[in-house]
Image 1 (tube, rainbow, N blue to C red):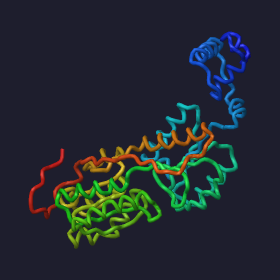
Image 2 (image 1 turned 60 degrees about the horizontal axis):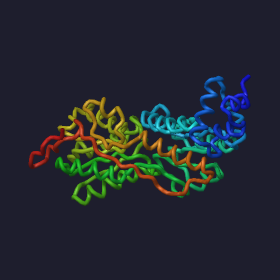
Image 3 (image 1 turned 120 degrees about the vertical axis):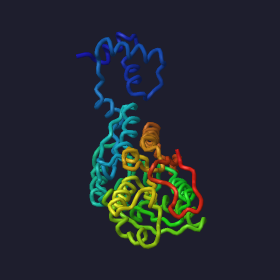
Image 4 (image 1 turned 90 degrees about the horizontal axis):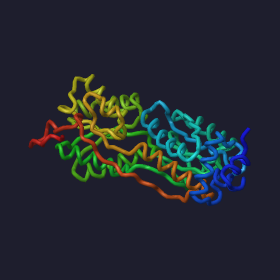
Length: 343
């Protein structure tokens, strides 16, 4: 069996230098690193990762909690984090919480008892900062996509308020003044921010809105719209803003089932810009957020803190958003003047 001593002999360095090259604990010149890696390749030497990690006091495993691994949004988010982790020699332990508080608690308790270096947490169920601290202790933590009230760590999120504002401005430009807002559950800060951004712009322009809440799923969107059908059929509401594309897609399906045309009778705007927005009929106007970028930024921050052996300093990393106009939005049927169509 090839040993570190064999690699050191071929590379013309000491075994300690080989260890430093593999661990990164001490600076080794580029020229020496190259010699070591060349020797490893020639000898087909594979370092014993577990032994290296034990020596470093690390597992090189990061847990990532997401509400639904089957949801395209969270799949993209996870892939973004995994790409960064893999490139830096870490593995992702994926935990599917199902938007369920008890499952989140069970996972968090398990992670504190098992050997993971840190946690990337995309919250789905209602959780307080105090509860999270009690469950995880001093395990390094980075929030992604969703913030937790009272949690004193980093949160990597999209500019949700601006996203809501962009949706309102887009519908106002088309002459809409009455809108139904499909929101998530009240504990979800991202949903609250999107609604606040929308309503502040909408009401400032004299718009009227009704907010209906539900789960951030197709079923949740269907239920939230059905709860306010009267606003569409009786009160001449001509627009729907949904805080994610799943709810927007559900709204389109439900409106079409009611024999209402989208966008001729009701315009619909979503949020996220997942592939469903491009596959839906009609295609969905959506606020685009960099989903993979959220995951990769969260992983970068967490791994940097692990490698510098300092906890992430509490702050918010906010990624910008843009609005992508598609076929689901158009001129209000009550608009007094024609509005030029979007490309």
